[in-house]
Length: 196
Image (cartoon, rainbow, N blue to C red; front, side):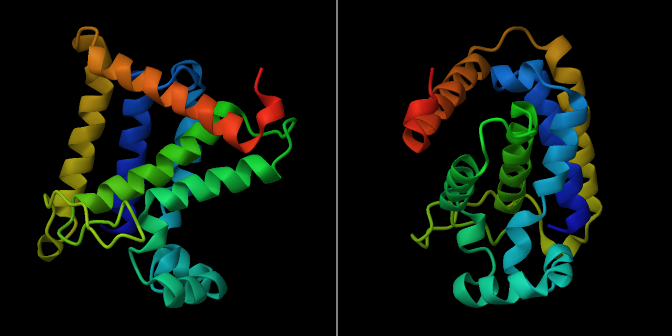
């Protein structure tokens, strides 16, 4: 997927997650925190590719990461998400100026990139270092980015329309409860004394 596609997809995912109330924090979050935070991190997984938009600007990071893990390796896995969250929680003080909704928006942006790459034929190694590739090849690189735009705009339109038109969805409530529970357990694991 192109950088433009990743940005559009992250905005659509952020709108969906906030409107679907995927977590209580996102449900109550500020649009001006969630969407910019998602856009901020939506290109970050491609730091493993020196010719990506971010890789060209940060070659000093992209080249060693590409040599160590290759493109669509570690940075496109759930382990990378867990590692980044662990570092963040260990290094950022509790009184930091990053609101919880912005932090969840940042995670959402990173995950939206991984999800977007899953709909390409190459897929992603979600369970890295296992080499299994998870994919649902809806996009073909030979068709250009017009299909990407259409898909992202359709997802955006659906995300905007969905909350007011779809009745209470137990699957969304279950996922919201599960994500909230995982976040509490993760915080307890990383910083046991900070959990109330």
